[in-house]
Length: 442
Image (cartoon, rainbow, N blue to C red):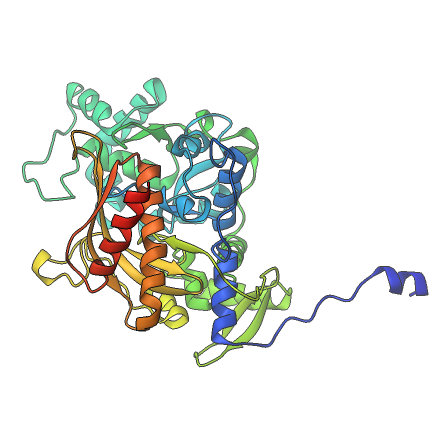
């Protein structure tokens, strides 16, 4: 090695072998784009470039049908960007050239199209990874399967309702006799979900009623994605772990596996091996986190900011909070979504969003967008507001003020004309006072 070579090749910075708990929190927040106040946007809000970059940073957006506030995949981008045009996200997954595609990733999710080949092994192993009624479609509905393939090829993109009508007209199975909440799927829907899980069809977009529009992959996905050979399962699992590690910044193997649900059958062993290989390659750095059981892994590109100063409401399906054990370990917040809990047994409410303030979760609110209230002007209803147990009495006024500002921003983004607070939860009185003052000033 010459002297010139030595000078021109700087030594790689030495990564920490130990993180304090606060450092680990800030690493996690920075990886998720939640460590600093939202960037100042132009008069029209964040543009397509900012929305695309935010999705790529997260690696995926979980989809959920609950719309009591806003669709689950919409809120994480608001948390990071502020008020944005949701049509930009729709454009990314429903118009060519598509940058996002639906896939079974962390449950049903939008992922960058480049991630599609990494999930081929799961589509191929549908018997192990799909739930029972979907995995059994070839045995239970062979005739309908053949007919639906023909319908999508000839007429796609089509919704499940359209396929059902065409299938019934062709003599296929009709609707089930027994209607059970959430599972009264027609044969057409079951077949389409089987084809979707296995990748024979993909979502070309969604209707205004949020129904998938099914079509053939070659009519939806970019040609370069379709032409890319699928990696081996081991290589794919390793790359998915790396994506999860980059998005988390720091995490346990459990956290990294959970990002793409790498926790069934042989993927558990492949994930352990993949993590070891990523350590050997320098992508992951084993670290100790103060007071927590490990091992923990730090992504080599993770930043360790000196402070975290953002304030944001987080969807129950936000990547920062959807691994509940990690949320409790790193942030000291015990959280569960209570949608499926009987109303009388709920502690905090139906659709509760944690409020991130700096590097702590300081409060949580049960929110509902009442779009028909106030003669159609709409109201954001805060049905309960609770302070987290660790919030000091002296910090409550500041938290109430920052939370009120965030609620007003949410209401503006959703086009709601007012914000009201119900007298439920220990933070409700302070939040009501602060909001009333803010609305008078407005």
